[in-house]
Image 1 (cartoon, one colour):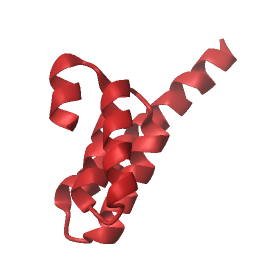
Image 2: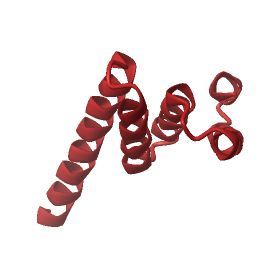
Image 3: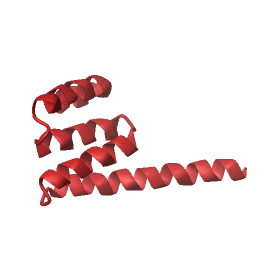
Image 4: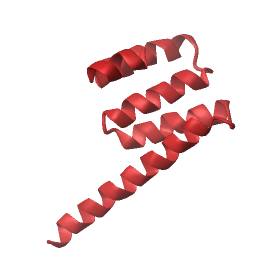
Length: 89
C-alpha cells in the first residue's frame, strides 16, 4: 500500500489506506513503519516519528524504524531551527 502511494506521490491516500490496515491489525510493525514513511514523505514529521516509534515497540530490532525515528527527529529539529531563525529576522 505505501509503495503505491509513494510511487505516485499520493501520500495522503497512502496514509488512509495504511490506517485501514492498522484498524484490522495494529500489531504489525511493518504497517506502522509504512505509515511512518508515508507521513515522513508527506512532511508530517511528528506523526512519522510516532509511527516509527510504534513500529519499534512491536519490533525493537527494526533498524529501518530506528533510522526513521532518527530522520524524523532531525527534520523536526531542522524545522524548529528554521522557525527560530525566521523569528529573529
